[in-house]
Image (cartoon, rainbow, N blue to C red; front, top):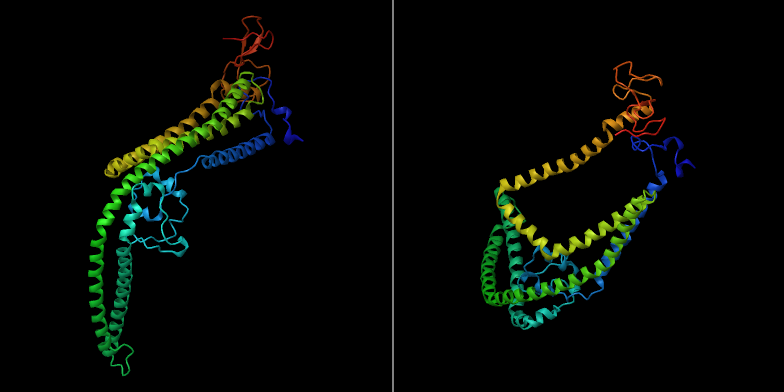
Length: 392
């Protein structure tokens, strides 16, 4: 049962100097607090995340819009909500012919794209886009066949050099095929180039139209994100201030239950920071970081200085935290009290007899006369054991 209870010899009746060795909460309590923190944070995080589905999201742009969109850091998270796997399906950058039957064929245009008249432009360029797509496929096939025949021609030359009687790769036939494939490839390259010139005005028009689409789309997303932010704050702020109020109330009473609210303050703080930082990331923080990073990328020395400063800052933060902790633990007054409790000299740790006034090893004065009652008292303890008088 000692696992759930305090050990008698670890409980101090005097506060100063004994914080490092006593344990006010049993091990099981710490384990349960960690479990409470993890579970509360998990369910709270999921609850906050699910609030994103409460307001209605802006309608998603079609897959046809992908090559014309100019992404920025704040847009990245918004396009992850698309209903199609953009990382798994190949989209041709020009013709917009669906590259996967699983996509369902034609593009489904959003209300933003319809507002700017984009579907009719795609309809006008569809025939040219299909021709361009077919020409590119034919060009790729001709290029592959040409490379294969050139490889076979090289093998045929090797067979002729060793005077093979029945060569597998007759060079004369292969040479004629190579010449024909080169002519075909040249013709297809001209056809592709002509079709690209023909489709370019449509692409330029679509690029201009999608600039307006993106302006409206970003505004709609910012309004949606603001509604999500307000909804999240309604859930997070009351909980945050409630546990903060409970923490300070128990702390003022020096209650042993303060540690429970300490864990709850940690949960509430993480959730509050999550809501706050996500909102400001989409509002302006992402663009600020992107601008700073692009500026840093242009100056190699500045980039190195930034990372060097990060190293110095990490040393200052973590090293400073350890320094303050060590300074608190190894405060001379605390060290003296701990050593006296173990019947050691506060200065040299020499074992002491109870009645000694001076250390027999270093000569440090261990006892002094109480100014109130005149009895001997330990010099390092704050109160006289005979009259209870506390020295300044």
